[in-house]
Length: 114
Length: 115
Image (cartoon, rainbow over all chains, first blue to last red; front, side, top):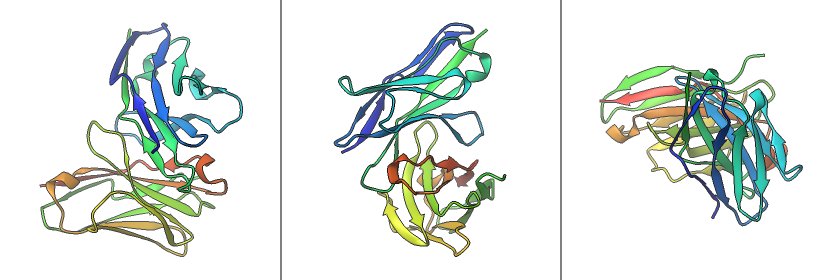
C-alpha cells in the first residue's frame, strides 16, 4: 500500500532561518510525490512535484525537495523563511495504478516568528 | 484563466438532510476529483471522474455519490447527513493525460457544517 508520513505536526522557525519539513513515503512502485501548501481559508496550491526525473526538485517561492529512494524520504526545504510562508504543508503521493488518486499526509503546520 | 470554482462556499445543514456541492474544472480539464478534509487532517479521496465515468472511489459510505456532466463540471451529493460529515469539501481538476504524474488543481472548497 502507498502512504506518506509527515514526521512533524508543527514546525516553528524564525524569519530568515532555514525551513525543513520532513516526509517519508511508502510505495510499491516508483512514486509520484508532491508538496502542497494550504493557507488559512484558501485552497491547496502545488509547491513542487517529483515524477522520476531529477531527484532534486525546485518549486515555487524558493522551496525545494530531494527524493531519496534509499531513505524513502521527500523532505521539503527552504534556505530562508519568510513570514508569508506560515501555512499548512502537505506531502502527497499519487497512486500509480489508480489514475492519480492522491494520498495526503496529515500535514505540518509551519509557524514563522518575526 | 479561471481556476477551479466551487459553490457554495459555505453551507449549514441539519442531521438527516441532503446536500449537493458543485464544481467547475479548469477549461480543458476532463478529470474531476473530490476530497473531504476534516479539521486538523489531510484531505481524504472520495471520488474521481474522467469523461463522465467514475474512475475511482475512496472508502466512503454509499450516502456519498457524484456525477460528471458533459461540460465536465461535477456534483457531489451526500444523503442522510451526519455530524461527522462536517468538513471542507475540495474539488480538483486535471488533464489526466499521464495518470499519476498530472498536477491536480484545487478549488477553494465548500465548508459544510452539519448541526
